[in-house]
Image (cartoon, rainbow, N blue to C red; front, side, top):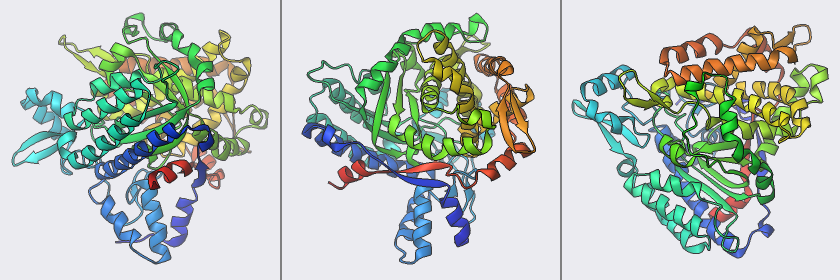
Length: 541
């Protein structure tokens, strides 16, 4: 296979800063450590599963490179491991080892399947739609037919092993809610029905004080970013974390304000969604180990799950903020970017509190706005099915924009400190450049590119061409953000697939001034590569 030039590969690798992420083992009881060990091992199974989902050859390529003793082989093995395959996730999945393009549908579909063929099959076989559009099936060819194969069948051996680790952890914990979730998630791995265990996950953290465990874990198939063909199929991931109870209590007040935030959305009242479950617990955690989808390429700072609209309608969703990961990203990437790209008056206005609360409200905002929408024929669908491959970019953009607007609302209510309001604009602007560097072929990257271009067109973001720096026109900033929120929410509420594609196409291109700005920050790490020291130790036990 064609190998990259050494200097080119080293420059690619330098975009990630290795940093140790850990949890103080002294704060954990013997029981906690005993529960964490099999959870980390179950997470390692999720990584193997994700590699199988991401490509047909990734594991074989990694094994071949790891067997090499030469320095070039070791460098390649390291970068293949970071990307979960030989395609660069920061360069829109361009191959860096070999020349084969990564299939848009990864291994979720036959490589030669097109969206048109997929839709034509469903038009001719409408009874297949639920299974074909399920996030937990793969599509395969059986002669002339297309068939949907449940994950529980396709990945049986790996899922049986992961279920065994989950049951081992369940047997070791005193926390009945944690044990119940682990048992039901283990069952889901073999039944392919994740709904009951998603409901159980929402109950974590509600055990009586004398039984409560600090461990917060989520494991299974969730995000659909890896499916770039239809944006339907969920990839396996895992977060094994320890809850920061004091920080979580500080943010709990937001849970009671969801209806107020929904009411404030800049769309017609008929599109507002007050029917979702009102439970929206917020957990601030320290990561012990992350695996699978979330460990490939750029790293997650927070998440809002479950994604199943049935669960959100019944119980709401939970926001989990990864504090130790967020702190590392802020220090190693966002602050240096601000020093290089923001106008001098803004550079000292960048704060971790604004960054952390923006991340929180981003996740809260995933649970706001349209979810289940009516079709013209009287049936219903969900926003993600209606918008198809455009959904992830639109949804991430919506969550970002509402994250800012909702932060400002909470500052004015006195829920968040005034300092967050004073530093939000500068912190957000630096964050746009941080995330655009992930690549505009990735959902978060194109979402931030759309925001930048919209704000530039509105005059809310300014550019000093002589210095190459950017500023904010505060008088125009919030109105422009509200206009963008209205456009995004309307596309979602109306299930407007063509409108979603047009919005991403119109505002998703990278202008020359951004290309030049990214060149100025090329020495700044794009992201971190966590080294989970406690997690690795537990994995070795």
